[in-house]
Image (cartoon, rainbow, N blue to C red):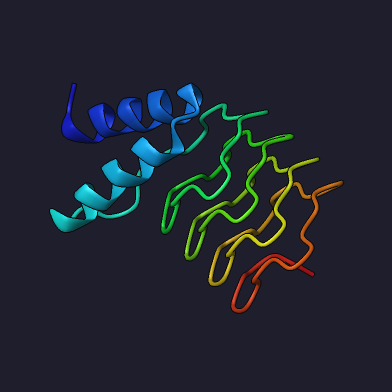
Length: 122
């Protein structure tokens, strides 16, 4: 298993365990080593509590985030093309410069979300 696949598995395991603090510490260490956002393309993260998760520049294209709690999460610059965010709580989420083209947002709560520079949001 390559470094990218190991990182993806580690990220998914931490997020599914609901240990956002550990995930945020791990992602901070990755960044210190010069690694970019984690690849979570096409992953099923539906219904998870991802409140205040540091998902800056994460690759979440095609990811299933349906009915997830992303309140206060940092998704600045994230790639969310064709992601399923239906029914998700995105209040106070930083989606600035995120790519949301063709993302499914029906029923998502975007109250007080930062959307400056985001693509694909009407």
